[in-house]
Image 1 (cartoon, helix red, strand yellow):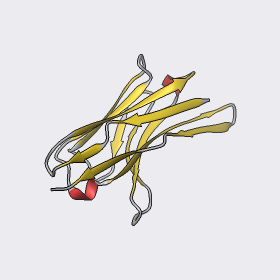
Image 2 (tube, one colour):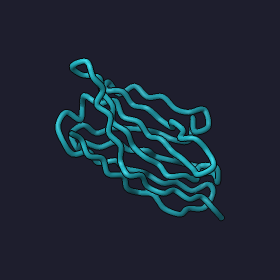
Image 3 (spheres, rainbow, N blue to C red):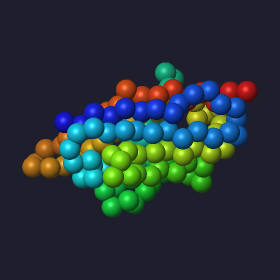
Length: 119
């Protein structure tokens, strides 16, 4: 069992930055691929960024060059550095931990943190 808790959201102006954190409790954090998703009431949930167990990363086209995902296995945490924020980045951001082990998927979600970008 893994529990995920996001933090770091808030209200910022366009062009500013935020750093989201996702703290994990439980065993085996380093064996999980980790994801940041976002969702608004008007849109489907969107995959924003991915980081594999080996540290490889991938980003949605809408955030490439502005967002950076990272992980610290010693601290059981991942981060999302968000720079040059835009109003369209406004959403609830959630982290997700996923792994395939013993022929089944372990899949855990945090509760989300609100990011609002507005002047």
